[in-house]
Length: 280
Image 1 (cartoon, rainbow, N blue to C red):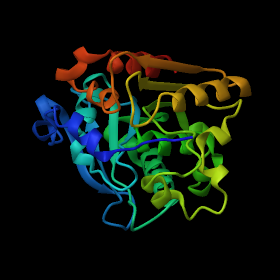
Image 2 (cartoon, rainbow, N blue to C red; image 1 turned 120 degrees about the vertical axis):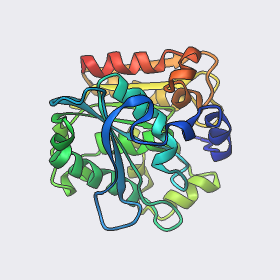
Image 3 (spheres, rainbow, N blue to C red; image 1 turned 90 degrees about the vertical axis):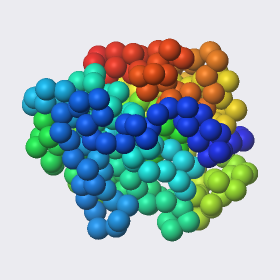
């Protein structure tokens, strides 16, 4: 199955979002959060935390994983996501992780597990509830999020139970992309001894937490059938809550860009995500 993951296409769309104007931890008056908190020893193992206006305790938590073909990306570029979700009442964590070519599969997933371990242990200091941690990702980040959710081995290696993830949101994610027929996937996964075990769809299971799969109907970068096939596989496995949303007129970057307040007119992605998270 062919999957295209073009960093150029993502950047072109996201440059319409004023991420530079949101790149502080208190955009638009948000309560004080934290920047560059280390969850490991590598320079890229750091996270930013966004706190809702008014602070408070026991808030639900969203850990957002950005995309970039497993080879690009920076947490500061997605401050608009932290802003949007914090304004809706979620303590929001955006973490950097190690990238190709310095590393290969499965290190970028293992970094996600390490970040979740830190969040579980420390998020109460920032007003978050460790019993209500939701995972969310876009593009390659949605892949990472879904592997952390469905393959129990990653959380187990970090000393966490699968139940630590309350629910998961995947935006425009690649979940079923064998064979490896483009340079991006070959670079990230070509070393894997068992390619089937690199695919989220391989781990569809009955006891998965609630999952929202959202994609743009016009996505030619990560084809919508990735989300459609994973949703079908989860339902066949008997998963209790699987929601599939396909947004007309949105391309690959649109599902992420629509989270920004000034871009929310493009599609109700943020509203749909918040409703899903509040019900999970």
